[in-house]
Length: 487
Image (tube, rainbow, N blue to C red; front, side, top):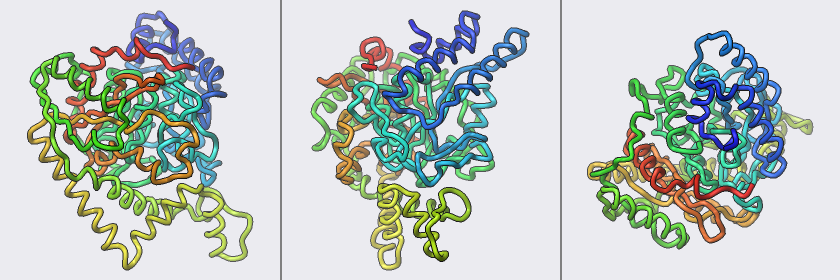
């Protein structure tokens, strides 16, 4: 097996047993990036020289017999809305095209403490607003399973780079499904942790009450490994929680006997592709064979989740993106006569169409006369969504749904129809509204050999449960052994 096809836990063993040097591993990934990047278009910035220099330093450390961490020398890709000191952080926007962050996000500090090697910054939908990575100012990322199709979004660069073996794992962010949906469409594992489990400090904000940093990996064990690194209370983020010491890898067992699974009928209704529906349902049947208790349930508020999400997310985006005014930092127009024109032209020229659409919608729902009718109402529905899930978790350990209503669609197919594009998130947004953890694992392919993902949702801070349920099925299906991307 080639180096780039190995999982992180396999790479760790090979470094430990001195079967591979860190330089060999990094070199293999750089060669893979050089070979595939022209087709996949996953990176905004590649850290080739810096990665090789760090690899050599770490190899010297090992040769001198110095202590190293468990993940020393493991390469990683970083979504381009996560601040990285001394490296461009663009959010795939003209507005931040030349912005070099003066500090690291807390998750990056944790990655650096482990002596992992940053291979570069990954493409995304502009300011994380999109479901296809088509709104990026720089490039459109392609799906490694079929280069004519989208990889999902907004963490499309992260998902595509893992699927194409250009990085062994990556960090992404998830506001309404932005990790799980591209993970599903690219046939990899994607985890959105409970809101507050991972610090958001240093993440360029889209919607602060919904955003969460998460991970995209080749398998569930790697997912647990990377989660171990990034979790924890952070004094710089007041929404982060202290849940004590945990080792998520210790929860990975094949036995799920007695686990209670709820299957909400609303998530298998009209709008869900037939092949997706049948594949997820047949996977759920396999849980029964493994000793799990499965029951159909109803989540009545699911039908309101999408509208609620877009009102709250756009309102928060309108507020968060107000800082990009052409004065403090970021893009500044050369064409202005007075202050008002400076603001107007800088924002008009610096933001793309989708970002403008969401700012306008968000400003509208927060405006006088509409605040009560839209924003306040959406916050009330948000409480209902949270209560509905809370009630369900009194009886069930996990809830299982499809991750995406369809498999990956053609590039350009939905670009001119925002409403159709927004429906791509219909299975994932309610989890962000409720602040719950969710994981997507690949469970099969459709007739065109495009991956189908299944979403496992857990109660707040119950990541161990969803990881275990995901791991048990992954061991049974062996998706990575049976299916491969085309590239």
